[in-house]
Amino acid sequence: MIQVFALVLYIGVGDDRQKIEETLYFDSVLQCNATAQEVAKRWGHWRLQDQATSYCVPASVPEGTMIHSIK
Image 1: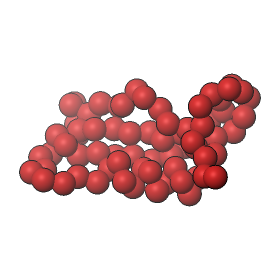
Image 2: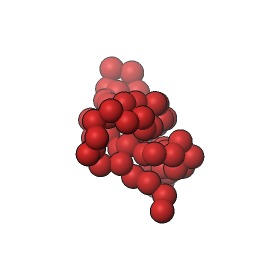
Image 3: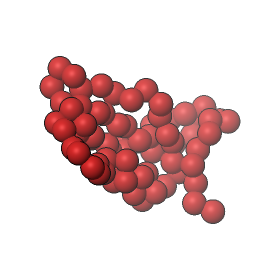
Image 4: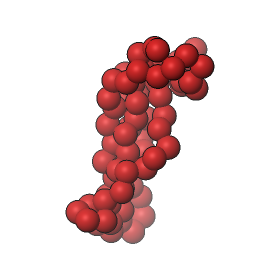
């Protein structure tokens, strides 16, 4: 197992809030937080159900898991 940062993303509010199941893993909390900030941005005709909440949490994943890194 290796330690990473997992990007968690929710779309919507209240009962309509849904967690996006595709998880991105990062070796840097700075890169994870920068990605979280960008995916939460909304443009155009924003509606309440379009609200996005994203954040990073520490996680353990098996060796061989695809991890985004800064090179």
